[in-house]
Image 1 (cartoon, one colour):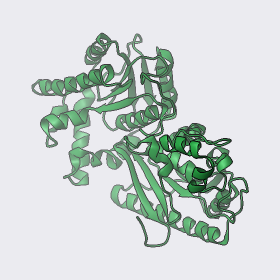
Image 2 (image 1 turned 60 degrees about the horizontal axis):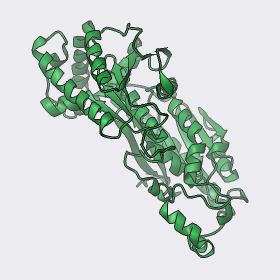
Image 3 (image 1 turned 90 degrees about the vertical axis):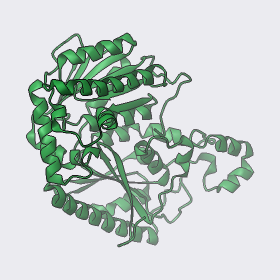
Image 4 (image 1 turned 180 degrees about the vertical axis):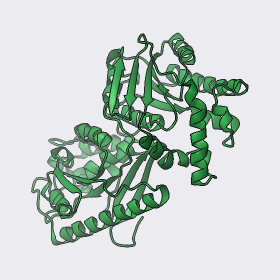
Length: 440
């Protein structure tokens, strides 16, 4: 994951050793979504993390065309096949944490039986890996139904199946598993219980800073669908100056009006599409606009203020990177005036800090509370900010493997806005044109 905040030579943070999170719970309770979100956040912090999804191992061994009987834990004929897939996943986790440089791994499976959980616990303890169980409990049928229709039918198991057939098949899987579900009751174990995806949380026997950090993040977790929009502030009348903090130019005001129309049109089209495909009405979902305290940013956001179900909030943490002595200078001018500094910048553009300035790493650290609030937020969010702040926020959601050095080069032209949709199987991205009919 790009833009991790902290690094050490060993790759291990907080002197915490290695931990494995063992998920527990019936399907469609938010395990995969929660696992991916936690991995994204921990990698960003600098804790090398990876989620191991049981379904991938099952599909690798037996394909996608598999009977619902496979998920019947009382079917002894299938027990050997299930055990083979589970053991393959467990051994990969042990290898990742002992020889692969990882510090945190997630065993993303149902793990419904207490006896089997104890076997898994003992296997990790043998490898000096600390297990932490996370149980996802959901008594709200509406949440489960929505999760099945919006998430599970898009899984790799159902790519060739129509929606209703996929829903019925998935519900059959759950009905096969339910009679064998045993909730965690052993208080000697370290565990977290999440009820109704964050509505209520229980913790037991939490040990060390890293496990505590996981608990802290889980307290902010939810699986509610939401969309995050990133848009650059409009053009100011003194575009090159950070200190001047100039108001919008005439062109900037036109951009702000077009941005508002494009965003509201995009949300309306999405709402209609979701209703048609899933019969779920999300038209009452609010849009919250977060903007930096730069004049050009909040003036851009003010065009949204009079729309129904929209609130606008100024946030100082969203200010752009302070260029320090490089105020109003092009890269060529910086190279000429500060040749040694420029060479240092080329070696590490993400961490380099000019005199009296901020680095991109500084901006990322500053934005950590914003990132946490983004993860907690259940409504749609539009962030209007300078390009430097948008780069760091985008890097948090970017696919694994984006190098830090590329973050200062990410482009957010005023011809588009970025739409990010976090899902259980990754973060979907679209770049949408601001003028009607245009996109890229």
